[in-house]
Length: 281
Length: 268
Image (cartoon, rainbow over all chains, first blue to last red; front, side, top):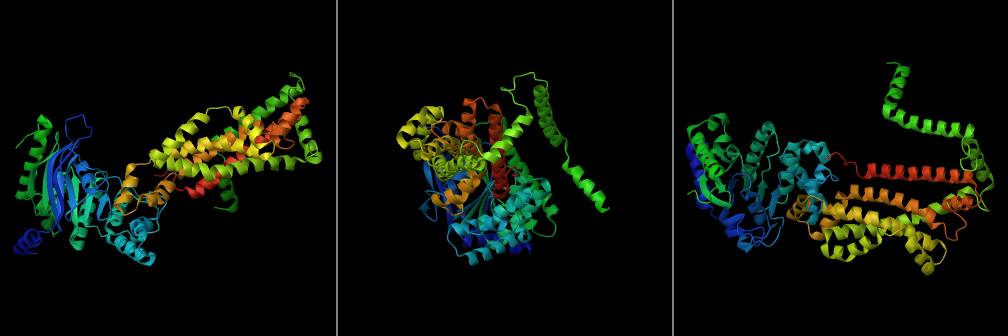
């Protein structure tokens, strides 16, 4: 792809296709009613069709909590989260979740783990098996279809978890530090795999991480969160993910733009760690 | 490698230090028993010699004990034990899992179980006999109650310590709460269920002697108690050894089933 084409594709993604899938409005969350300090305060967030949004922040800033609110696993104290204009009241398969520790079911084979959602949704077995194998193929694990989860490595388990969420064709895929527990090499592989899957399927992804490189190399948009209270303090539009899938990804990693943005974001995060103040802007 | 060498290698692999220690301990205890009785350090009535115990075993094997053959005694005890155990599996497992899963069900059941669990079985056995008579039903009920609590508690705590992500994950994949109970909670708790069942069989077994105390004419427990009235310590020894071995056998069978059903145990 030439640079002009890339730009065009990017603009198309933001302008021609403004369909909002998830919208979070004024969401706050306090753990105990008496305690006035909010874990999340006045969060506003929109996810558009086909976007890859990375949510970046120091540990304890409530980014996982925000993801759980969008998934429908936790109700917010104030405000609401909506999907396609409808307020989210509980978890369902339209919002697939990939956890940091993949909760695969040890009593099921890899294939049956992927088919789990389809089976629960009463999709006919033949069709379910076909789809499960298709997605196992997508994550490169078709030959491990009959294995049990405890026979797989950490990276493979996470790939099964991704296939398991994607096989449902969810409206949005919510990923909670999915590569946080993996070693550096496996992580690199997984980032590439996820980027390819995102480009192939055109799914919408909200990706939580505390790794700046990961966020910049994957996201079309990077949101930086602060801690105490958890707020979104800055938003960056990024397009590195297109360059990364090119022939020379390491050139991108050391490019001027990349390094500068990386430093800007790290600065934002470090400032908070030092002062842990609520208003930085 | 020749066949012989391979055979020797196989034998070597089977002989571990732990196994030698286990067998050694049993052998030393046996020798100690043999020496004490051979040197007549204790009265023969209190501690019969291994030879006498073996003779008593052969005798009751051939002639039976008090009108009934040894297999009949053993069978009757096992029927009481296993019928109560079946009832425990059918009720304590689902109720325990449900009360771990649903706080309202727990609110109803937990206090009841907590109340009766520490009671000595003999305390309520007298009531059971009054209500259900002296036949097998009161004995089965007693063993059932003894086995119910450990299984119930193991299942309940198994569900409660389940990682929330297991359940949350299933919801986000499209399962409803009923499906999650059958497809996630139940299989995930199988290791706990087996632990509860193994505890329960132990507890029931120790209650067996008590259950056979009242107006029974068969059963290994009854045999032991009856023999004690006539100071037949050799028969008491036979009964105790039989109970010990059958108890170990039942546990071994349970562990074998567990390995087949829960192959992932300890591997996660």
